[in-house]
Amino acid sequence: MSEMVPRRLLVIASLIVVQDLAFFAAISPLLPQYVDDLGLSETEAGVLTAAYPAGTLLMSLPAGFLAARAGPRLTVVVGLVLMGASSIGFGFGNEIGVLDAARFLQGVAGAMTWAGAFTWVIEAEGGERRGEMIGTLLGIAIAGALLGPPLGALADALGTEPVFGSVLVISLVLAAMALRVPEPGARTRDTVGQVARALRGRPVMIAGALLAVPSVEFGAIGVLVPLKIDDLGGGAFVIAVGFTIGAAVEAALSPRAGRYADEHSWLAPYVLGLLISAIALGTIGAVSVLAIVVAAVVGTSIGAGICFTPATKAISDAIEATGLHQGMTAGITNFGWAGGEVVGATVGGAAADAYGLGAAFAGVAIFLSVAALLALRAGSAVVGRAPSRV
Image (cartoon, rainbow, N blue to C red; front, top):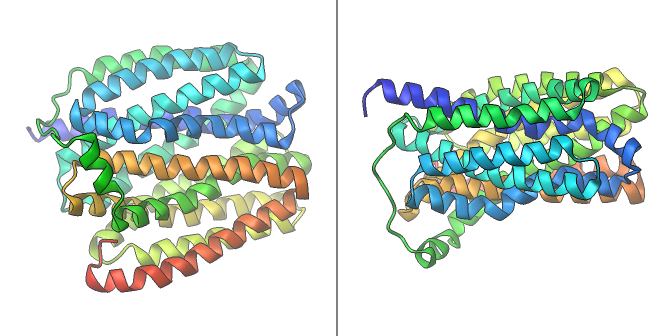
């Protein structure tokens, strides 16, 4: 590959994940309006929020295997076409069943575009700067989430039809761009059975769990924070501001956390990030001042920006140690993220329905604190043997 190809590739991969994260995050400012217009309960709002990651969860490992077996370019192109078509359904849907189904298909498409783009970049860059490159790509993806809340606010003002309908055009343009970029020639010849056995190994399982924990936090935040801000009198604009500033902070921190993981260990930034997020979530649940709540939302993003990249780096290292293709790093990353998002959104919404928002926030904060302690206990011995690996 020429030196220019990785640069071009990074640009296209960045645009792909930006689109994915932007339209995933666009639901947050729209959620209170859907609750009012469709008469949704907190549980039903949680299901709508969780439909996207549920689709990603279902497709995560197959998408990683497809990227490894058939190549990242094909995986990306198919995912982009499906993303465009399903977004049309979401934009024009006006019944909860249609919206849930469209979000689910968007999640399936997102698993494919993310697996293809992630695998493509990791293959092109090699292993020495893996943590930094993962952090860069995650940071760019999170920057895409900066666009999500404003897009949601725009859809709230102009209507979902033109905003989500534009995804089809954007997706087709990105697919055409992707078809013009050469891809690495490496392909896996592993069978499904061989891959399944390798993925059941303890290092891969631990690494996947590391990513799932903060993903539970994000799933819960996506449901609980908009409802909390709405209860305090803030509208779609205030929700968008909180999530946008938070995404900007997280995007800036991710590459730095990746460099630290390359040079030292995943453990310290991971645990620190979980504890910061736990404190911020406890604050959101306990206070009734809108400005403090918005500031605490930014605090959760600081924690996530510190711990997500080291967890992803741990997955990549664990996959490399098994001898599997790096396409399965994308598969496990999607699986851990989506599984956590589904649990966080559905359980968080149900807990708020049953016990109130304050108790739901407190429950997630306690969960993150316990997970941080377990990571210290399980991870210290492993770090002692190999600082950059689980």
